[in-house]
Image 1: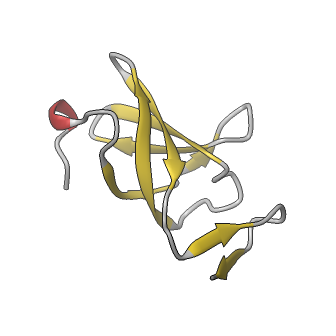
Image 2: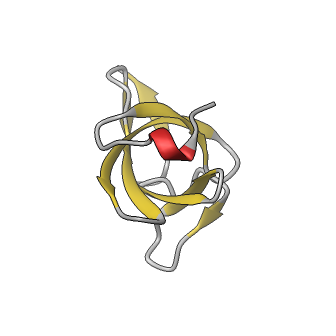
Length: 80
């Protein structure tokens, strides 16, 4: 597991979506560091590869990554 002190923009790692945010994004945590994951709201409880896109002091933003997956409007994952 990645230590929250080692996090940098552009890093990719597996993260469990633990909750849904007020704006519809998924929420995961690494230690006490909160990560908001775009387009992950319907995937609570699942683990996905994410890429950090923006970092702040106590939280950050990430996007789902994966060259072989495409996410569609209803939250389904299709293999390409």
